[in-house]
Structures are given as C-alpha cells and as structure tokens.
Amino acid sequence: MKVLLIGSGGREHALAWKIAQSPLLEEFYAAPGNPGIADHATLVSLDVEDHAAVIAFAKEKAIDFVIIGPEAPLVAGLADDLRAAGIATFGPSKAAAQLEGSKGFTKDLCARYDIPTGAYQRFKAAEPARQYVHEQGAPIVIKADGLAAGKGVTVAMTEAEALAAIDDCFDGAFGAAGAEVVVEAFLDGEEASFFCLSDGKTALALATAQDHKRVGDGDTGPNTGGMGAYSPAPVMTPAMVERTMKEIIEPTISGMAKDGNPFSGVFFAGLMITAKGPELIEYNVRFGDPECQVLMMRLKSDLLPILYATATGTLDKVEAEWRDDAALTVVLASKGYPGAYDKNTPIAHIPDASEEAKVFHAGTALKDGKLVATGGRVLNVTAFGKNVTEAQARAYALTDKVEWENGFCRRDIGWQAVAREKA
Ligand code: AMP
Ligand code: GLY
Image (cartoon, rainbow, N blue to C red; front, side):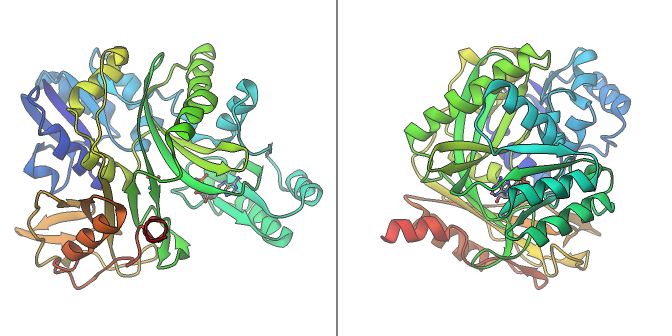
C-alpha cells in the first residue's frame, strides 16, 4: 500500500513509527512531517490547506490511502475532498468533524440521543448567559463553542469567575470560536480519555489514557496541549469501558448516521467518571497528542489494516491486540511554553531508542543539518513498564539523557497511577 500521512507532531511521529512496521506498506510519504518522521517516510513540503495540491500529489504518486492526523484539516474538509477524488482517507468528514469543531453541536447530539453529559445551554449573547449562571450558581463551566486550541474552557469555581469568562468570550478572547458560548454543569469525578474507531456503522474500542493538561508539577499552572500521558487509565475498568461503549459511543455512531453525518475515524472521548458512571465532557475526532504516543507503544497489531478498514467500512473484519504493559510519555517543551518561548534552540543529543523506550519528535526541525526546537512541545519520551511506576522510571531515565538546554518537562507524569500502585 502507498500511504500519505498528513501532520507534523509527536502524534504523527508515533503513527509513522507504527505504520512503518506494517508488512503491507510499499511507499510512505508524510506532509509536512518532521525530522523524526523522516526516519520512516519521505517528507513532502505540501501546503495541506491547499486541498487541490494534496490531491494532485496523491494522484501523481498513486497513493492508495491518506491518513490525516490533526483536527484542523479535518474541520476544513480535507477528508471530504480526498474521498471525492476517489482516494481512501482516514478521518471524518467536515460535517462529522463538528463533533470536535463545535461544542454546541455535540451537546445537542447528546440531548437528542440521550447520551450522558452535563446539563447545558447555548448562548449567542452575554446577558442571557450571565442570567443562566445566576440561576445555576457555581461551580459551573464556560466554554467557547469553537476550536480554541484547548484554551476556551473555564471551570469556574465562583460565579464571578464564570461571569468574567463569559465576558472574555464575547469580548473576542477566542476570536470567532467565542461567538457562541456553552454554559455547562460542573461534573465531579475522575477524568479519562477513551479511544474508539468507527467506520460509520461498527465500533472498535482501542484503549484508554490519562493526560496531564497543566504545565506544572502537581497539576498547577496554565493549561497546555498536554505535558504527558499514560495508558491504560486505571479508572477505565472493563465494566466502565463496556458502559462507555453502550451509553456513549454506540448512540453517537447511530445518531450521527441518522442525522446524515456518519462518522468515520477515531473518537477521542474525554470522559468524567462520576458517581453515576461515564459522562461525556467532549469529543475530539483525531488521536490525542501525546495520548497517541502511548497508544501506539501498546498496540501489538498492525495499525495500517485497522486504519484502512476504518476508512473503507470493513471495521467488523479486524481486531486490535494490546500489550498488557503500561506506557507513559513525558513531553519535553521549550522553556516559557505555553507562553512565549525561544525558537531554533539547539538540541545537542537525543538518546537511542531501546526495546522499552523511544523518543518521538514533535516540534523539531533541521537547520543547516543541526536539530533545533521550533515548537512549544518538542520531544515525547515514551516508555513501557509492567506498571506505570516502571514506565515512569524508564521514561525519566531516558529524558535525563536528552541534551537540550532550553527544554523542560514535568517530573511527575503518572503521579495518580503511581500513588494508586503504591497504595
Ligand atoms: P475540554 O476542552 O472540553 O476538554 O475541557 C478542558 C478541561 O476542562 C477538561 O479536561 C476538564 O478537566 C474540564 N472540564 C470541561 N468540562 C467540564 C465539566 N462539565 N465539569 C468539570 N470539568 C470540566
Ligand atoms: N492531549 C490533548 C489533545 O490532543 O487534545
């Protein structure tokens, strides 16, 4: 199979590393890719916003299958345009990607099909939203409707905080993403991420993970795209996975199909495990970054036929097998992230991968033949262990061998699971 992978982050490096192991693979391209992905695929400098250029490249190379990593091209309809050109594509249509692109869209779907989630209202103006907050009281959650790079959510512990967040949204803090606001009941419990494939009809559960959104140790400081993750998530017992499939994923698949937006791709469900059971916080319509890195480490099966079956409506014919081990990833980020940081700082040394551990590239580039950090999140040091404690020790042992002066990481990734394992 001739494959083109779209994206350039740590998530795509992990996908590329896994796909490269497939005996079905004949030719492999990545656009735009990164220096880590270059170990596995030929990098192509395509502008992925130019759908015609992507299609032209795919035709020229007789690409059989395109895999789209990030959300932006999905929300922009790249999967629709590729499929219209007759190219099998992993990733949902623009219409189905609204599950991630619009929080209000997802909440309305939940209401229509009885999917457990926090009670909510949608607002297009500040005054009625403020009124609703007065009625409901705090704690309460304020969300910009659209894509806001993970920054559009305020979990307000006081009414004043909630009102300020509403004003921020309508004052343009999140641009067009904040033109509509969702106000939602606060859910109390433990969070987990659940990944599941769908071809529009069938579901294939993948695995679970927990991430660390805050920049600082002890889950302090501002939110980021994710400073680390581990899999599996202990709170997601087999019984909880079964309930999530029945109560959340299956009604989503059938509801989306009924509404004329069949969903093909990966569900990344953000869940709150409350006293009542699993409730949906949000959907993303692509693999998590860095959650994908730990998932790919644990996946025993060949990824390529699984993704191809998802894209071509034959998911009922494949299975996914997982290592029982835990996997954990530590994100090395540029000092200053998620605020301003220096670009093009030199990375002097990346340790070699071993059987148990591997460093994925996220925001790196080659400048005059030298590796430099160009992004906020730059490297993902990922390791296995028989439990999270062992995976954590291995990941940090490898992290300490990275030579990059401008880098930093959290030192406590996996702390909840480690505490649980010690108890
Ligand atoms: P989201 O971008 O929707 O995933 O929200 C970001 C974070 O805000 C989530 O990971 C949760 O920690 C928190 N959050 C979102 N919605 C709720 C809710 N209804 N109740 C409690 N916490 C929430
Ligand atoms: N790590 C969170 C995300 O990919 O959205």
